[in-house]
Length: 98
Image 1 (cartoon, rainbow, N blue to C red):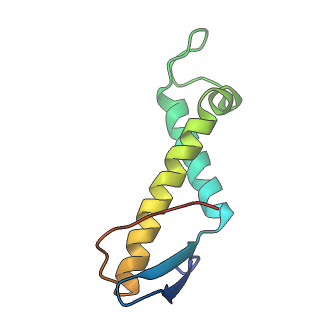
Image 2 (cartoon, rainbow, N blue to C red):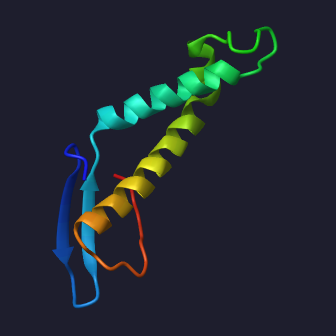
């Protein structure tokens, strides 16, 4: 498992285990910036040539959506990675962000 993740488990009952995964903000910020750069390469916005849209414009237009996509991807990936590393047999997975 990636060393930058903090994983804690708390056995709630015979059938329930609470798994807490903490992801550094820098990891999410780096992924958001990378995704914004990807979008900037192919974005078609009136007044700009394809691939020449300023990063600030991409950030203001799509930043919130990109950030939410990245957070969802990170949650999915890190939770499954943590479940595997902690050898938990999951029947269902409920997630929340704080």
